[in-house]
Length: 324
Image (tube, rainbow, N blue to C red):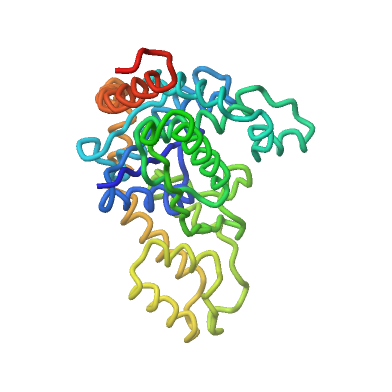
């Protein structure tokens, strides 16, 4: 079975957009691939230098993915920082990659374009990401189009390693470009904390309903027919309800005598039905950081076994160790 790898950057408690657009689709891959998931804490360190916040975000993300259905017995789930071999492989890659290729990285270029002075970690970010992927022998890496450039660099350096030091030194990964699910926020723009238009993923039933009722809708009178397609409330309903339930809501809106408030109530109920059990699991998981540490440590043991096999082969091939 092929190996699929997913990195999760810890930037705070995920919201509904993260769940519908990334978490749920990523977890579906466990049915078709041998899956590896890691929390990319050192990637987050390029921008987050608050120790308490970074540590807390790691636990937030771990509890979220476990609550949403990640099974650590079926998949490998760990902290990036618990596998030091990734930093050695990243250095090897940096010694093989032209500086200009790293300078063309979109995160680095965007920072310069904004007039920022990016740290060296932003420049080397793609090399560390390549090491994250290649260290575990990943065949498939599901990414959005915004990460395609990083996958191309990972492929480039893997091909270069095999060309210079022998075929089979490392696995050349393949990107799996995911069809992007644009989850609309309360104002119709993409749901984002930066826009403050998001629905908290594990909000209580009351808070969840209050957030949903803030969704911007049309102002048609109750008795008027309404077209649901393309509206924020209906798009969200389609993402969480069955096709039959969505068709029923659409028919009621088009018939008239049924308002946007009714749809929002139905949406709040559908969200609570899906997220309620996960909310309870998240609360229990997040309150026991020692247990989360144990889950991540067990995953790191499995990950390091794979990592050490790869790094020893690379060391021998490049001359850091005598060929065995």
